[in-house]
Length: 288
Image (cartoon, rainbow, N blue to C red; front, side, top):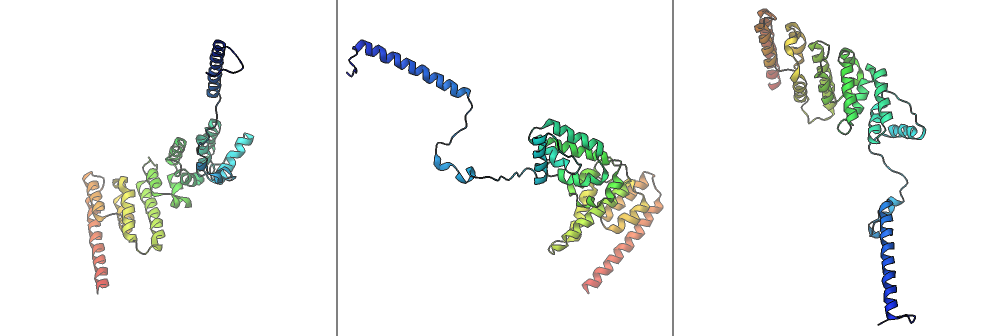
């Protein structure tokens, strides 16, 4: 047995037991205090620590562009920031990302008051990058699309309209636009021609085939019966954007509905024969 300092065996046993109890209580208090106070996790294996990241002083914010993040920092530092319709898409999503409800509300309020047709396309182009991640972006897109329903004719004249993506053009065309169907077709045709023109740098692509595929997708929900036979013959047919069979079916449907007379259908048939004859002649000359 080991007893130090000449203490009796019974006394030492009692002393050690008491000391052990007090140490256990101290450990419990310490563990309780550790649970109450949040602490940073420390990697047990020092070899796994990336010292380059610990010394890093610059960080890439991949979610937002530099201008948006700069405005956001100004808002966080001062409580105020400038708002413009063009800058709002990124700032709105940043407000949702960092949970800033007052800034989020201010962005929506600004758009409701100052939205103009000239800034619609740049805003939609910016919002397309955020729609799949942020609910507020989708809400703003719906707000803008509602805004353009009675301003579609002006929208189609904006130069930035040609820079919209195909999916965004489809979203616009699927709205209840207060514009004739022939104007919608002309806007689709203009966008598709611009899209194909950019493909000329790729000689391996069949631009005519790409053009037909684009127009087939865009005009899928276009109501051709609302386009008069004269416009079908003067605008749609020469564009070669739609198959002749589809135009013919539309004209026959219009005749059956009593919307137009048989005369337009006969005129179309004659023009179709002359067009097919001209195309066949061109192919023969090319073959020769």
